[in-house]
Length: 191
Image 1 (cartoon, rainbow, N blue to C red):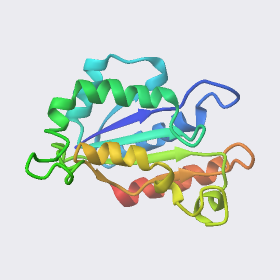
Image 2 (tube, rainbow, N blue to C red):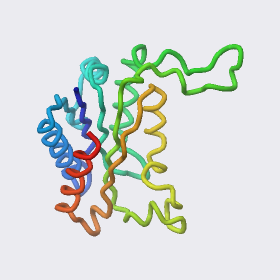
Image 3 (cartoon, helix red, strand yellow):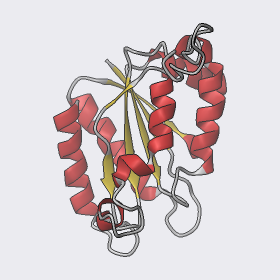
Image 4 (tube, one colour):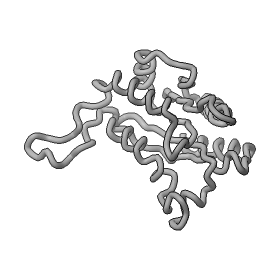
């Protein structure tokens, strides 16, 4: 099986995207040890749209690794999604899923990539309570609620989600060794 790891870390501000790149390296190492073929792209280094579309189509699983910036993915990740998935669209989606006989229903069900899976792994400065406590900033929506748009983009293509992974408090209270161990366990349990 082939796994495509997309590193959405960006050299910007104080972080430099180092934690996201480290997590990509860990995922690659763990997956190779389990016998997976691993393809990788560091989005911030630039990419060839057609080559990336081919990687997406060849892959059985896609791992999206990126930091939470302004409550979403960095612009380079969205740009990659727009450019690469549009280039591969004829192989990823048949239609938006609706039918002329009942155009109000079925939107988002025309994906062709039903044999593919994806995983979202994100890093945030926000503590986990900001996601899971209904009285805190993200109102109890959790990581998957905050990354809802990315989940829906993958579902639109027909892909199925693997459990998401999140690192919290990565600037104010970083615990890199803990993140590494937790991520290794997550990869081992879900792949």
